[in-house]
Image (cartoon, rainbow, N blue to C red; front, side, top):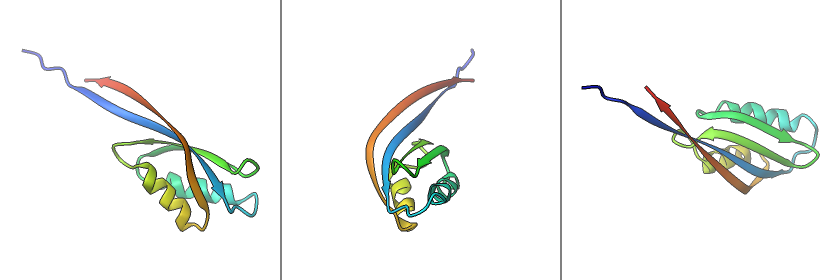
Length: 91
């Protein structure tokens, strides 16, 4: 008898506004900080539009942790929208 293991991996992308960035280096600092968060796979922050997107595994971290991390840096962050994508891995 063969057993097939199926692993559901939920990846989510959130789009957020980030206000309070006072210089063009601020987005780099936010990106560096968020990429250190376990489960975050991609971060893009734009100084001119005061916005960013973060892709992460939602079984490892969540939107609240991401927004709280940004707020701890002294910026304001607000969720604009979220997109989930399920991928199935078969072993």
